[in-house]
Length: 88
Image (tube, rainbow, N blue to C red):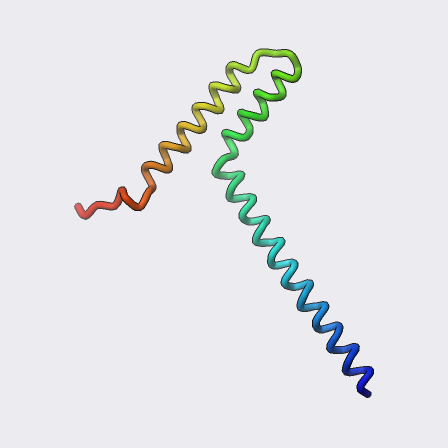
């Protein structure tokens, strides 16, 4: 009887460990999606520039697009900061 209880308890602990692992992986996935959504345009433009340079083409347009996207993201950061709150 004690062998049965021990194996049942062992299975429960493994199940709990797997559940915790799944939760952590899900949180990392959600964070990765959020980061990619926030920086996505800049990352795509930079990747395009790298691919063009490797292919021997000019990457000026992609570099300009990356700079514009970074400027846009910086502008959004400035607009949504906590110091922008005012009582009107």
